[in-house]
Amino acid sequence: MNKLKVEDIIKKKGFEKITSLTAYDYITAKILDEAGIDIVLVGDSLSNVIQGNRTTIPVSMDEMLYHCKIVSNAIKRSLVIGDMPFMSYQISLKDGIRNAMRFLKEGNCDGVKIEGGYEILELVNKLTVYGVPVMGHIGLMPQRVNLYGYNLAKDEELVNIAKKLEEAGVFSIVLEKVEYKLAKKITESINIPTIGIASGPYCDGQVLVFHDMVGLTQTKFKFVRKYLNAYELFTNAVKNYIQDVKLGNFPSLEESYEG
Image (tube, rainbow, N blue to C red; front, side):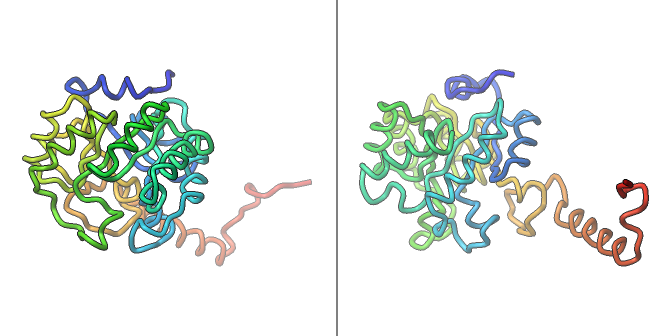
């Protein structure tokens, strides 16, 4: 089983759809890797689904690195991308470079994802020169919801932004909640893959939050297809366990050690 590289992801554009899901723990990452997912994203969405925060803003660099290291321990094939959290790159170029490199050095990631457009071009350029693969992220940017909200991205300027990000050196770009015709235009305008989330079928690949995809969260987003109702399955399993313990049905003698 060969470990995927950035160049392998780029080569898929126009030939094979790219698959990506989030993971924040060892077991989930192992499942995704063995199932054949292309990109495992350790997203700052762990702020929501793991920590229970309202937005992605509260999660810290150290918390991201902790989860990246755990996820990376499980991976043999997939490309692992760490999400640079709020305040890890906005303050200064120096901070951005240092923190991105920490994702590779301490988190054992294969690259980083950074939200932004023109304002991150210099950072992207520096990182790629220094050997840090960067995945871009435009459209709806969750780290900026306090200013822009969760609105659909329809600005044609996103095409130019995507081109500039490609020129700066990103190997792919996440398009989040971009109007699907615009997402198609962006995808056709650049030579690197686009990874869509809530941006329609014309992107080169797709990413979802794992917990949403398997139904562990009870959110009802239009763009999420639930392949399982894990919340209900897990709840029923716990209820059955409680009942068996209270009725004395667990453990049985067969499930007990004998000296």
